Length: 268
Image (cartoon, rainbow, N blue to C red; front, side):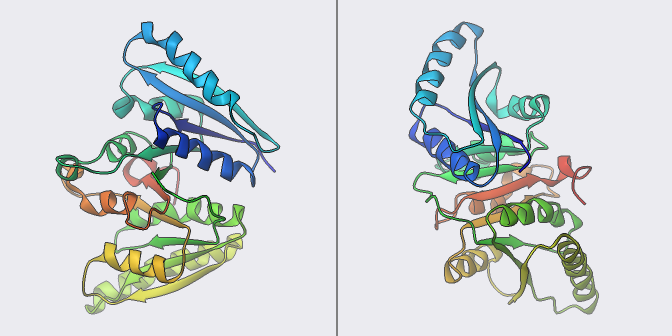
């Protein structure tokens, strides 16, 4: 197995522990170096933060082929995480979300703000996210080419666990849009067949909330991971409720997300 580099954001809370546990869970299946990242707003806080990270690391039982090292950076984690991940040449950033409460539901959660600053894919967990083998990955695709940006990495994650992907898309009543959707799905099928990725394809009714239909399918199929490409045509992308609702899904499923605008040069 090849060596990967993952970054785990830790804020010295329980949700940081959950993110680290999930990274180690993936590490049972793929050799990886993990950088445990804590961002301080002042350099003078770095020493104390390093002591805390070291204490967390010492408590962990590492899978074979996994290393775990502390990383302290000075800056603003909402704005600078993307630069830290790019500088480290990480393949994945794993973080926890405390959810979207109060005004965060309007202005976007901290998790979404971090994701919008980064071209590296994210895996977001919630408090209570279970550590399960990933056998079914749910990937919603819409009419935009940006929604395809998640397809490769979702397939890679399914392959790591020996699972398969469920591609979900809505029925289009307009003939032109139906043809456009058919083209999108053909691209995904061709890509997956060439790469040996197992996938099933599901057409959802056009009525109702796409988010709710995704969750309903994930629950019915006992899926273990959601994956989507974040994109918004809005001048204020923080108002994108779709991405926010998926990463804080009621099933507590881990959610893989890529910022399609920044990752367009890397995927598809």
